[in-house]
Amino acid sequence: MRSASGLEEGSEGLAMFAVIYRWQVVPGLEAQFEAGWRRGTERIAAEFGGWGSRLHKQEDGAYIAYAQWPNEDAWKKAMESRMDHSDNEARKMYREAIVPGTFETIAKGDVVADLLELRRP
Image (tube, rainbow, N blue to C red; front, side, top):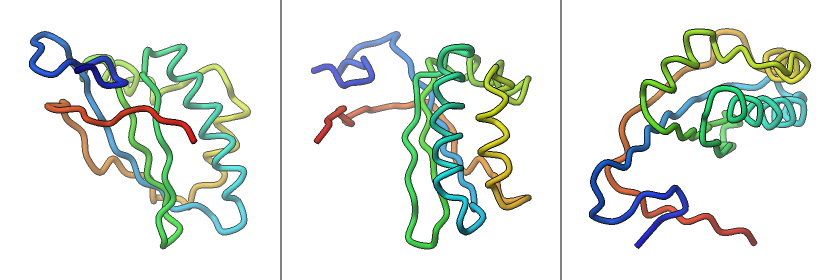
């Protein structure tokens, strides 16, 4: 059985690395953050080889993003430049909306099982 990520049950040699980020956003700037995050994530995928991300909003207003990468080395290489992608306007949009000092990487590691399927309503 193949998941949306391309990992197969019982297959060897296929890899995926996942990272979970967390931010607090300035109240009233949520739409700006979300739009900038979307555009920035699209550029990161195109320019650094990321496999995309999902953005979640918690009840307390914090945002969590789950990002997928082909492997840890690809993620580390992107992090060396702080993921300095070509959409400067997007970067400005999301950075200005983040409460200073609240960005954090809360988890990262190799995916050992993938049962998440891409479904759209």
